[in-house]
Amino acid sequence: MAEQNTAFVQYSIRAWAERLDEAFTFLLGDAGAKSGAQVKFNLDALLRGSKKDRYETYRTGLQNGILTRNEVRAMEDLPPDPSGLGDFLMVPSNLALLTPDGPVSLAMKAETPATGEPDAAEQSTETPGEDGGETGVE
Image 1 (cartoon, one colour):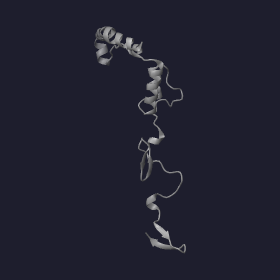
Image 2 (tube, rainbow, N blue to C red):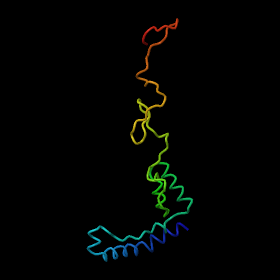
Image 3 (cartoon, rainbow, N blue to C red):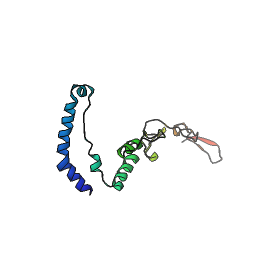
Image 4 (tube, one colour):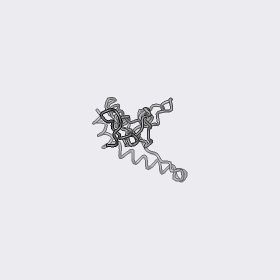
């Protein structure tokens, strides 16, 4: 069914929709030109795949930080997320960059380790001798 809708839009409706877009935009006249307003028919609803295909696409976009939750909700004609967190991109936490100074998030903000241990550069390289005393630097 999705293939039939795509063919119908591409070969039947799109040319007419583009002509109507131009005609209605022309009818807006100078007021429309000054404000940058234009008319454009949205044929996306006719091109939508099955719900399963759409949700798989949304999941991939959300998990890879390509889409926000509010963008997905808008594509499904739903209102924005009421929690206020829907405009943030999400990425897997295992994709943080590891540097000698510790992990850095994709937002390039250094995260401080919670352990409180000194960095590797600050750790001593002294080794204990056979009697347990320090013998010097390796």
